[in-house]
Length: 299
Image (cartoon, rainbow, N blue to C red; front, side, top):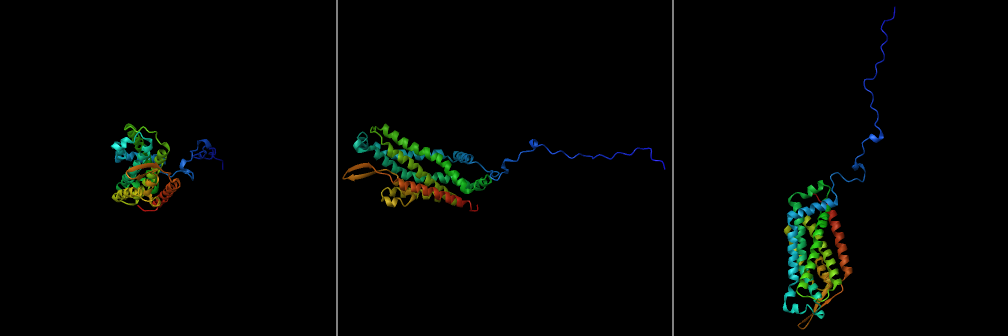
């Protein structure tokens, strides 16, 4: 039989060619968070978290509250400058007017410091209880303990300039009232530095307390109690003042007064740096441990 007149049909080609593998330079880069040590999704940098806490202070009116306490401290600390006997000593080096003024500042700071720290910590932390802030912060990668540490950093940015303004304001009032004796820089500088540190330590305690207690009246009440304790410790023996946290307002005050009949003699005393530094280190370790424990509490 004769073969067909039609030529044999060619083998059909593949309908779709397999796509060529992209070149190495054209492949999409791996996401930045793919590494083991990369930041967790939704987390926030510490600087951004502190900035948010500072932004909250505008609504909480933290600055006016702080300035009111600073003004009250300056006013009460300078009251002796307006008395007749006080003005007579402003130009007498033997009367130690700067030591007298520093003792007054230590007395007033022991009264107002614990109250101010409790108020600042309570207002800054209560907003998390009332607005489900703990849960919101956790979605941004901030555990309750980390949020407390951020709050302390933000409030420290308020406490430090407030204390500096408080000390500088009292010095300015003294100069305006005619205190012409050369200033004793060393004890004033040491006291200012330690007053800032003690206030931050007390504030850290109140932040933790405000985080674990929903009723903020308790936090402010503890601050009021601490104010009375710190005032009493100025009159108590030194060993007793070192046993309670609020006693360190008295421990860091480097001036004292002794009475000889009707005459008051003001002198500087050596500050127990070892006790002060030890207390501050212990307070820092306690705050770190307590805030880490907050991360295991269900909210």
